[in-house]
Structures are given as structure tokens and as C-alpha cells.
Length: 436
Image (cartoon, rainbow, N blue to C red; front, side, top):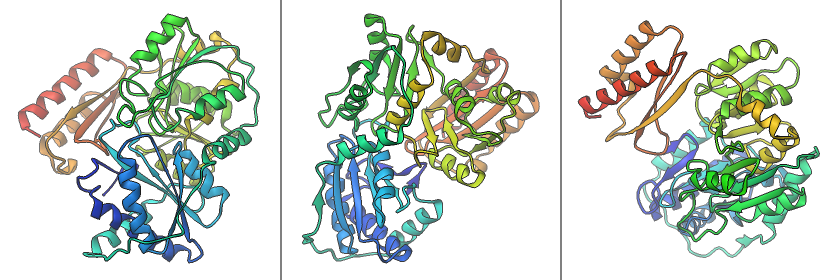
């Protein structure tokens, strides 16, 4: 039921049918009660998808049956749930979003009463309870649910309150808001810190979230940069926890380049950089001279955060655009990342230096598949990995399924772009021949 980051699927289809959503809500309430009997309320936020209303309506029924009151925060970035549950003790938080996915997807992210995304163990307990209960009779009346209409402005105050730096940058900036959760908020924050910005994709209609916009599609942002001769482009995703940057020539600045830059600026002495297996292996060479150790986790900003907790690290991230500043937040937030990044640069020259950080050629390719058999049981993939390892000693290979879609992804990093391209094509042919 749970993927890389919460539950995700297509509303009205499993696992997001009306009955299943109610049951998920009821299961969450039962796990909350086993953890802390004093918790009586759950904050719920959402992005701008039309289907959010359907999911929230049914979640409320399930949560209420488990004696949980719902406080509806409205449209907010995902990090707001972390901030609210950290500030207001004895609350859990639920964000309704499918992040960067198209509008027809949706999902459920859960935060505990400490402002953290719930652990693998808690996910397993929720799923176990969900599977164990066959039928539940729900009451349709629960009078203590409330709507909190000031949530957006409180989130803004909390973000600005945690941002303890000054921005001296005079850069002209373009921002793509993905018609998503921060379509109003980012503009307000930008005005409060006096940024010179041009905005696109800030008019959601329930169906256009991430449509030709956001972190996965920066074409319109590139056009804006060139048309207005901007110094920097910024795109966020549908729930405003990921952010990507483009330079004045509309070229993407790689997430690994951002991670390296921030690690040098943010990491406290003798603390490791926490990132994932997807991060470019050249970064290890680049940071060795600074005596910065790199520890890699499985994909998912939730995994990065929990590894940061174990190691004491104060900074970590994913090259997909998640950056966690643990001294300030317990999850990634696009608005805070933008503020922090801009506070550390002063000019286009600084951006150019980041863009010129040397990385190994790296290529990530996704292939649509029909089924998701266990990777360690698929013989042709096992043989491919074994042969690759013997042939290419200085290369990195990762093959994994998408946590949200019927796709398999292959990542290869190494000295030669030509070899990487050849191996990606070979893997695609093997998938076709074996009809995965």
C-alpha cells in the first residue's frame, strides 16, 4: 500500500476507492491511539487536485470513526503539515497530494506528532491493521471537525520565522509554481523578502497541476528566462517540497551540483552529508578535499531525514530537488530552500560557479512495464547487473521500480557518456525481448 513516500494511486481505484480511503483513515486513527492516547486531532492539508475533496471526505469519515477530530488546513505545501504538527503538540498530520504526478493521481502522506514523516514501522502497522479489518461500520455524523482559514498565513510566518538570514541578491528571478499547493504562498513570501520575480503557472483549476509546468517540465520556464533575460529560474512541484534551478541561459543546474554547493555552506564541522544512491559518485571526490564524508541511503527524502537523525547530520538531500535543513525543518520545503539558496549567492557569477561543478556523466531512464516482479527474481536483470559489474569497475549502476508508477528506472554513472548510452539502450532491448 505504501510506496516511496506514502500512499499513491488513482482516485476511485484501489488503493484509493471510497471504502479503502475510509479504512486508511480508521487505520491511521488506531495507530495514533496506540502511540499516544492524548492525541485527538489530525491536521489535513492538500494540493490543488480536484480529487482532494473526495479523499478528504472519506478520510474524515474513517478518522472520525476512530475518534479523531479533523482540522482542515486547506491548500498548503507539504512541509506545512510538519510545521503544524511540530508546533501544536498532540496532533498528527496528513497531506493529500501526488507531488509531481499528473492531476489524475493523488496520494496520502502522513506526519507524526513530532513533525516527521512516519517511520517504516508505523507504515507497516497501519497496513497490517488495514488488512486485518474486513468490514467497518461508519457513522456519518461528527460535529467537532473544523476548518482553519488562516493556515496559509501561519505557514508563511513559520517559514519566515525559521529563515534567520538576509538576502542581498539583486537577481531577476522566474518562478514556476506548477499550479500547485504554493501558487499563492510563494508570491507572498517573495514580496516579503523583496525578491524581483516573474511568476508562471499560478492559476490552478483542479486539473492543471504540474501540467506542462513544475520540476518535471521546465519548458515554459525556459521560455520565460530567455524572453525576460532573467538571471535565475526556479521551478517547484505540485506539493512544493521539491525545487529545481535553471541558470540565465535556461540550462538546468543539476541537483547534485546544488547538493555539493549547499553541503560546503551548510554542513557543520565533522558532520556527514546524507544523500541517496542516486547522487553522482563524483561528489565524493569533489568533497574529499573538504573532509566531508558522504553517506547514501535508499531513494526518498524520508530515508534521508531518518539517516540524518542517526548520524547527527544537519544537511542532506536528493538530487531530484529535495533538500533538508535539519536545524530548521524536519522535511524538505521548496520555499525555505529558495530562501536559503538565495541567501548564499549574490550574483550570476555565483550561479555560474555552481553550474560548473564537475560531475561524472549520469543518465536516468524510465521504461513503462506491465508488472513489477521482484527484481532479485528476474534472471535477465540479474545477469545484466552481474555482467555490468565485471565490465565496468568505475561505473555505478542502479535499477529500481518507480514507487508510484508502473515504470522501471535504470541509472548509470561513469566516465564515458558513450558507454552509458550504449548500456541504457541494451537494457531497454532486454526489457522488450523479455516482455516485462
